[in-house]
Length: 419
Ligand code: SF4
Image 1: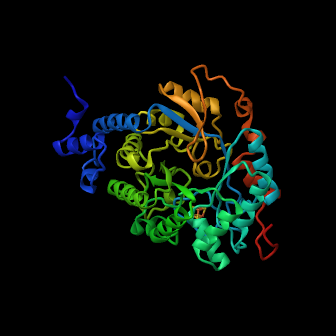
Image 2: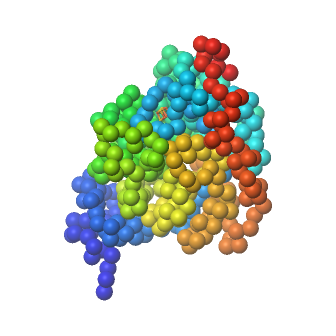
Image 3: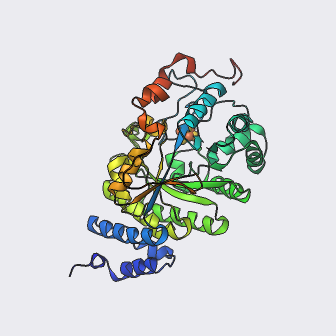
């Protein structure tokens, strides 16, 4: 009789049996699960799915949230980033507090429990901008969870304020920040980062800020961008670094692998760098998510499939490759859209539930901190306001409209103080 384990060498089988017996794999065991054939990747997915069932059951969660990327103007030039614009660029936009609060209000009216606020790093930013923004949102919408500011932004805020990152995080927390996105991690390998994004927050700075946030009770997500210049060994090293940090602090809520959206990224146009294999293959996407479940499932519990990066069909498949979460409705999405992702800016709750039902699983709406807020039976009927939206671009504003509208033009602080 055929057995999926027959696809593997004895050392690989040993590693997988250890994982299924609830053991943490050693680095060597993890490395043995790299460079697999496509058939082995499918078998690995099956193991990841079994583990997922042991670790979190059949529920698949999602959060009703809105992204607010309030400026694309940035002083950095990360080579993987198609979102940022120089302050002189015609497409550089900036949303003032009034518009940001209007967007939070609208999200609230449509049932969102979270706003996710991240942006570029505008030149000469007033150091306390993020703190004032957090306070303004919290004062008006105390019930909305503020998930905001990557470690790169925390570092920028601290540098501009001439204080330590710990002090800056303390002020953010006081102002009402609830959690932080663990983005700006990409791959936690300094040599690779120096090529991928010279001048980006360093590995040590990223780790320090995450540890500081966790020490203050500010939990964070964790991410890994893959499918660019990295090797498969980088995947494992990155995940093991996160696993070590999790055993120290317990502060990560989830791990989100992010397939590199390369079409419009500067890296795609840089001949001096290897650009013939940008963007992960389908099997690589399955491989990374399955590995994540096997290496991180025990301590992180939650492994997220990103529909905005992978699309609905692949995200659905990832639910049988170790994932137990589909992320958020987003409502607005600028960063992946700018890079060439074609999966839209909103997936309504009923659409997310449909994907989950089709994968034979049970949808639940969750809070940012994975508290189950609503469960659903198979009929998929609710009165979610977001399900009734017919033209999301028109109602919520598209990324293209943001970059084109004259009233959103970024004004350099030398000409006018930041609003
Ligand atoms: S990734 Fe962030 S810091 Fe880097 S260029 Fe893009 S917006 Fe700026």
